[in-house]
Image (cartoon, rainbow, N blue to C red; front, top):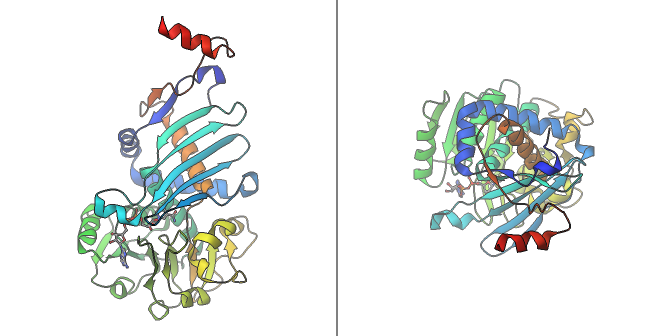
Amino acid sequence: MPPVASELAYIPFVSVENMMRLVHHFGIETILDELTDAVEADYRRWDRFEKAPRLASHSKEGVIELMPTSDGEAFSFKYVNGHPSNTAKGFQTVAAFGLLARVDTGYPLMLTEMTLLTALRTAATSAMAARQLAPEGARVMAMIGNGAQAEFQALAMKAVVGIEEVRLYDIDPEAIAKTARNLAGSGLRIVTCSASQDAIEGAHIITTCTADKAYATILTDNMVGAGVHINAIGGDCPGKTELHRDILARARTFVEFEPQTRIEGEIQQMDESYPVTEFWRVLQGDAEGREDVRQITLFDSVGFAIEDFSALRYVYAKLQGTDFFQQIDILADPDDPRDLYGMLQRAAA
Ligand code: NAD
């Protein structure tokens, strides 16, 4: 249970160091597995959430976004950027932090780093979709784009879907080598490839997770055979896509929250009449998932606030009984709530 308001002068802050301790303590595959279930549980109560496309501030280098939502009991937001040119400067493409608060008092409950947590929740969300949409018995995944998200994506597909082989491709051979090194010993069979065409050879799931502020064509129509599931992560901003539109024309496409994905997803290339299914409908039994073995399914992921809400609540629960946080006095707490100025004056004495 969240603490009562009078206990909230101090709230837990989860630093990057403590997030790493938490992940190692419980084990990354356990975290990914449980987080997938946590995101899915919130998707199953979709109607309970406030939903709006995220607030995006665009620049020529990238985007800064605020992602809020609430289920009426708790509120959360994430601050996140997306700057594909950052890695050349030694910075992350995606960095984030977020806050969980209680609705009845409006008081924060927890502040946390969310760069690692975004990688975890994005991988969990991909796995949640693939668990429903990938062809039966999917064991091989192509992973195109081997940057910061790549290992998390591969491990979630292993833990949740049962992927056994990952075929890596990136335009930068050093990124492929880094990912292969990091995944050695994970239990996955790692195959490094010299072209995206090689990577998708025999793959049941194709994950595209590249970063370029452009209408890129990571996959063309003739590359994609019948029956695969495409997990498209990197096209998540106006003017930033990964798939040729002819693939969309052939695929059955699933999205998180349609009004946001129409602006940011692969489907920005299609007109408004292009049919999509919000994924929560599949979970609630409202809509079909994969309809036949030859169908191409596409999860056009852009990242939605409910996934961050799930991740924040999951971490908040995991903190209980641990020391994986610091207490920070983020809230002024005068003895008399109306004597804020008196509290300031007394501090001078
Ligand atoms: P990153 O910069 O660490 O890695 C991106 C990789 O893509 C790099 O290694 C780069 O060399 C490679 N790449 C670029 N163009 C390529 C091409 N044409 N073919 C093959 N590889 C190519 O970025 P990241 O943190 O791993 O994020 C990857 C993408 O995922 C970004 O576009 C980011 O915005 C997006 N993202 C989406 C979500 C979501 O919820 N959908 C969440 C996090 C990140």
